Length: 351
Ligand SMILES: Cc1ncc(COP(=O)(O)O)c(C=O)c1O
Image (cartoon, rainbow, N blue to C red; front, side, top):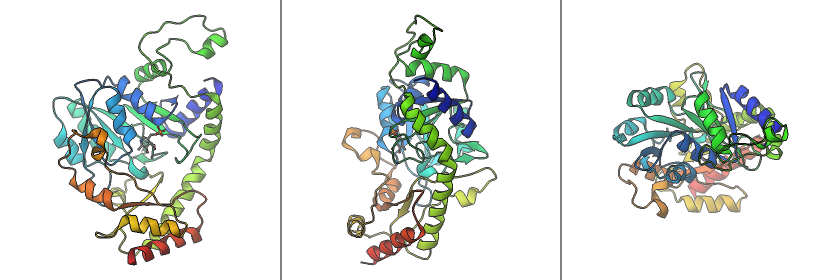
């Protein structure tokens, strides 16, 4: 972790308008550190969407806290239901995790106002949101911390990698120490002769990102605006190709919000199949025709490892998750490829 990583951090911070950006080995580690730095621990409850990647929830378990699962807002808005969040708060609630699903921002204005009034910490899982913004402020700059992923399928990648952003000097200093074993000086400081020794001031981790991956991430960061433009175009083409069909394309109420300074860094292309359609059969038929699809996500509260967690009041997500299908989306996807996917999907549903 040397000067290239430092350059990645400063350019990422500049690109997103963050006060601090701290490179981390991956987003799962970033979420873990965020929980720890926010002081979440045993006895605390953390409200999480059940429609997310399991890493969001595992991070809550790593610090010994209890995840409290929350429903999605609706079939047009798969993000966490803020009415339900408010109802789920108890005296033990310490934090809420906002996952910006598919890159569509949670209404952070409302969530942070509510959290502030109740003394709750907001942590943003921005794995899908590279970069999205609400009211001109980038996702990852609203909560106390924002956690980003550079995994191979993300909007920018270096294979595995991640970033934590924060506007707090105090949290940033703590994260930097916790990222590297709780040590007060870094290898680079000692190499440069700026320090010869160190203290260990808390129980930290090795969640560092090395310069090899940082150099790839830097190159990807430069290309990110172009990638995002191409992804937005792919989505536009899907909207045209699926128009008038029985397939629902969630818009997350974004058109309704449509405030100045709101933007979506499109990441995946989720659609909701009509009720009664056999999703497995649709996926199998599309696969035969050379179209890879996936599912985002099975509800986390349904996994065996989370047996015993709250499972009531999640019926909306359960029924939506069973109908969700993720279509191919990547920057180099051509118009004829989008048309082919739309045609094959319509035929698969009809069959
Ligand atoms: C919503 C969400 N959170 C967290 C993660 C974990 O990211 P990473 O693979 O960088 O640990 C992912 C990655 O797929 C994700 O999609």
